[in-house]
Length: 240
Image 1 (cartoon, one colour):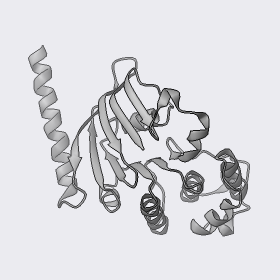
Image 2: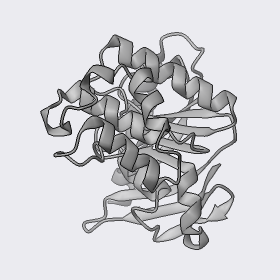
Image 3: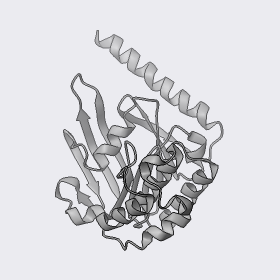
Image 4: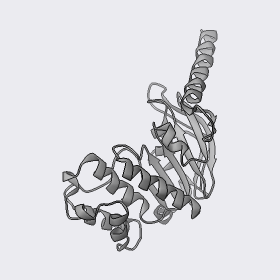
């Protein structure tokens, strides 16, 4: 569903991501974790064509990103860098427009309202919603068309426990239907509940994996990052 082969993207000053290699198969949920500034959002922007790699190749749904037909983006659901919504339109209208843009039946919006407990807010303008309900609308819009590839950056932000459970159940359900899922989060315990694999990112590179069924996940994560930082520091001193 998603493949990175030797992918790099560099910003001015040298920051960016380097030598990214991983795949996500149909029916697989992969979590991406890292400290702030590790490069998680950059990786996700590359996966969605929001950035183009300076090196390597990104393949989405089996096609090179550069050659992916526009119609195939309808099979991708995403939430990266905040909700995509029209602030002066109602919740219902935003979800119906999302369906139309994704080539889905606008009637799917009615089911999303129920699924995300938004029925009582259906006629309220998006701009008047709480942060948690804005996140619910954004997630509903990203998932209601049953995409084959799902890319979500910090999707549980501002969600209450009911929203987190709804998200968890939906991701598991989509994976059972054959979707590939990439999700980033600071909440390691939460992603471990749904992920088949957990990728660790640090300083713009992927540095290893954590078994979501393992014990002391947070300790393992910090030790993995600390070990990588130690190696980088030693290499930097040698180069001076």
